[in-house]
Image (cartoon, rainbow, N blue to C red; front, side):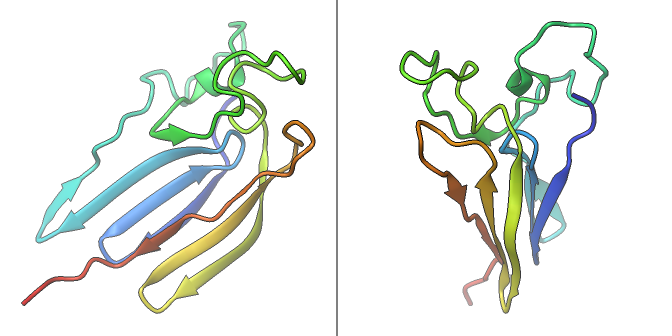
Length: 130
């Protein structure tokens, strides 16, 4: 697992990057008034070549947030630890720019206990109150 294939969602003052190989939110940051906040973290070895290490895929670039199904070990349907959503590729179904931001729909390429998983994150421009 090397460099991630990212889908970027941006709005004025908001940036989010989703890792399409593992369904992790790779980066999230917001800026306002010249200040930037990036409140989430990524493992320090993200981006390094770890092909020589036997490591579960989601641990290579573990970051901000990822969906687990099941949460830990799979005892009903064979799957890697934390399930297919956190360990296999997602595809872009739709990306849309909106007046105040952006949205996209992503679909997991692997079934989870017979079901198809999708997610649709949305970022919107920050508003200020007078």
